[in-house]
Structure formats: structure tokens, C-alpha cells
Image 1: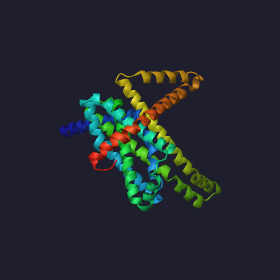
Image 2 (image 1 turned 45 degrees about the vertical axis):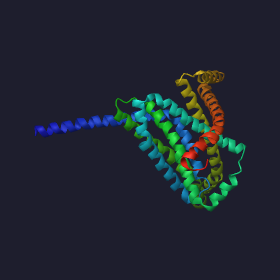
Image 3 (image 1 turned 120 degrees about the horizontal axis):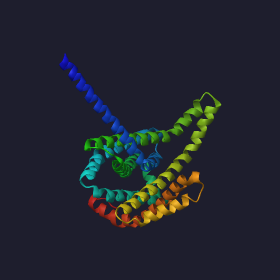
Image 4 (image 1 turned 60 degrees about the vertical axis):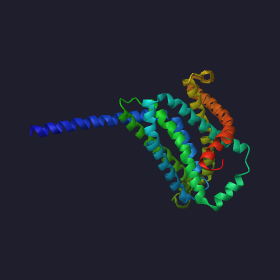
Length: 321
């Protein structure tokens, strides 16, 4: 009997340790997740554009496919690589982050460039989408997962840098919680956003009160504007997040003059207003300067990507650039 009581006491002790470990993981995940807020906003704002133009019945399946790709990116591909880099080659993390940030700058700048200078392939692409919506969906999903890979890499790396874990397994568990939690939050929000017009249509037709039906009609009318706004916000967020990552990377590598100047300018702008607005104005000023740098850097990368990198990738992949 005493042996059984001792065993139960040991089991209780192990359970307490396990519970404490879970609490530690969740606390670390919450702290690390908060550090990635900027990239999460970027991810949530960028994704809805990938379902625009498709039949309502295909919206949730497309989001689900992208979400599965995002989980695969974070847990299967990026988590092991992030742990290996952090523990065996930490000097590589900053250059890789800067490459990812540069890609975000390029993507955002390219979208703005194509709005300002439309290229001749627009009608061809529209015609292709009408003829073969399945092919277009496949392209959109692949493009979304590719962009998600970059954003997920930034999320996982930033989260890893914020984790204060005593061992590799705690780091891995915390990163896994962050990766899954962020994916559920982002793509759950995206699903709600893209289906709001259907919710509005249902309310407009079936709500029992005039107020409910009016709310439904308002949602239906508002959603095109909301989606266009999200597309603009997503592009701005790409430039802001990408620019801030590149500037921070330059500081880490010893080229801190731009980061120091932008911080000083933001500080001066923030402290030129009333005290209660200092923090908000300073943040907005810094984010704006990061975004402007991201746009300039992205525009500079367009000819490099299209005239140099694109043909090289096409030569190796067998696809025309």
C-alpha cells in the first residue's frame, strides 16, 4: 500500500511539473506572439485578396488550403530550421530576415508600380481566369502560400528571439504554439472577413426586424470597400514590415545610421504634439518612414528581380521568366 501511495505521489509530482511546463510554454508563447504583431497584421491584411474574384462557394476552401499550407510552412519547414539556426548558426538569422524583408518590399513596391504603370498582360490574365478558374485558383493558392512562407519565417524568427526558454524542447513547444495560434487567428479572421457579405445577404433577406435587414444591406454595400481597403492596408503593411526588418538588420550588421536617424526623427515628431499623443504619433512617424524606405528599396529591387534573378530562376526551373 505504501508503494502505491509513493507511486501516486510521484505521478502527482510529474503532473505538477508537466502543468508548470505547459503554463511556461503558454506564457512564453503569449509573450513571443505579441512581438510578432506587425507581421500578423500584414498577414491578415494581405490574405483576403487571394479569394477576390472567385465564387462564394470557393472562398472558404481556398482559405482552408492556404491555412494548411501555412501550418506546413511554420511547423514542418520553418520550426526545425529556426531551432537549428538559433542554436548552431545564429549569425545567419539577420541576413535571412533581411532577405525576407526585401522580398516583402519587392512585393509591395511591385503592386504599386503595376497600379501606376499597368502592363499589357492584364487582359490576357483576365481571359485566362475566365477560361480556367481552376488553374487560376491553383496559382492564387501557390502565390499565397509562397507569401505566407516569408511572413511565417519572419513570425517564427521574431518569436524565437523573444523566447526565454531553458532548453531546446521548450523552445520547440513554444514556437509550435505560436505558429498554430497565429495561423488560427489570421485565417479565422480572414474567413470571417471574406464571408461577411454572405452574412449581410442572409440578414438582408431573413432578419426578423427592419434594423437587422438594414444592417445586412449595409454589410453587403460596405464589403467591396472593406476588401479594397484591406488590399491597400496589406500593401502598406508589406512595405512597413519589410522596411523595418531591413533597417533593423542593417543596425545589427553595423550600418545603423539610417535606423538611428529615423528613430531620432520619429522621436522629434512625436514630442512635437500633446503629451497624451506622443507614443501614437512617434509610432506612426516611425512606421511611415519604414514604409517609405521599404517602397524605395522595393522599387530598386524590381529591375534586379525581373532582369537578373527571374531569368536565373527560370533557367534552373525550365520556366520562362
